[in-house]
Length: 544
Image 1 (cartoon, helix red, strand yellow):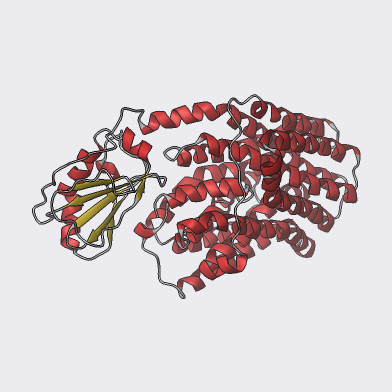
Image 2 (image 1 turned 45 degrees about the vertical axis):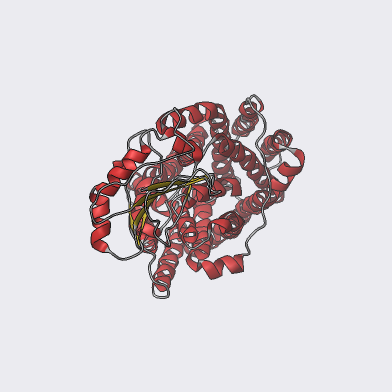
């Protein structure tokens, strides 16, 4: 039997007795409208292998996926929840809380589908999910172009300042402090910029912050002192965080519940590829001159143009009450500790990697390749690692990836003095292992959060990652001061080893959550804003 419930108990017809304790899940009405044959596909699943495996298991609750059984025009992100009560229930859901659909098989012993009766919400014609994705991406391409330009400028600025600080003879510890002030400003901007956006609006905030960020880059090239750079990096961090908030909220508003996950993936690729492009621009001029500072300022200014020319009204924006770090730690200790540790490691890689490379005697071109290799490795390995975490105990994946990252960092200690090419290869592996760990920890935390807690938890996770990022360059510089240039990799190895050991400890304190009960992995960046993290959490929530 099929029962279609509009959420208010109306438009409902039944054939046969309804079993008790049948779970209901929320379904987006647009997905139902797009799914021309969705009911037939669901009944096919009832009469096919899925129902037989349900009947043989006979214990509630049991989950199976039937996405391969659905036609291309059916819903994206489909999943199945089965509960063996008086009747077997198969519940297909998509993204947002608009409609409810419960598909029930009255007589599971026969394997025959029930009778379809529907009085409301008949499917309407529409585009396939892939077409909807292409449409959304087409509307968003100007915004993605602007954000990619911003990331090129940010990537160039970060590496340029690390190299220039070494060329100016700044002490290693002072350089670490300068780089850490950027993350202090970035954390403040990530937490407080949304309030300015809510009061003033996206366009005004983006224009003001882009102007200040562009001017601050030029001042870096004019006033080259540790104190001035510390203050300017603090200001730049706040401005860039605010720019991310605005750009990511625009992109998030362009997505719908069927395409948010895909658009988030495109956004991550643009983010990392743009940042890598900034590294390569380091070869465009002498880092000791003013030209690269001017180029960075131009890139940040140009990034303003696509947003200002974007059609359509500004997205709605509202701040949410935050979940405290203490309460979040009580819910998911590994999620909080992981966000803190990955924030520390990634800030050391992004903020202090160029300083290590220059101190090791690499040329400007080699420094740019050193950083680019790390970013490309992250771009390539992000999704395979995420897929593994969806089918295995996520804590086990976090443990293995952490230990592998620690081993790679130790290997880099010995390889760095032997072969530059081998060092680049190890940096690609290290970036591909270390940076996705943040997304794994976020996904793990979401596995234990209620849906209504996820948005509130995002600010706490951003806070944990931001605090770790502040510590990253300082601790990396101290390690290099104590042990020499190899201290950079020894510190990265220590961070990931400690994180892996903590993950092992947590595995002894809590039983594993079944893989089928875990939310879906969604990529996110350790130094993104709360808006991007909330979008990733929304995607993860779809499978919970």
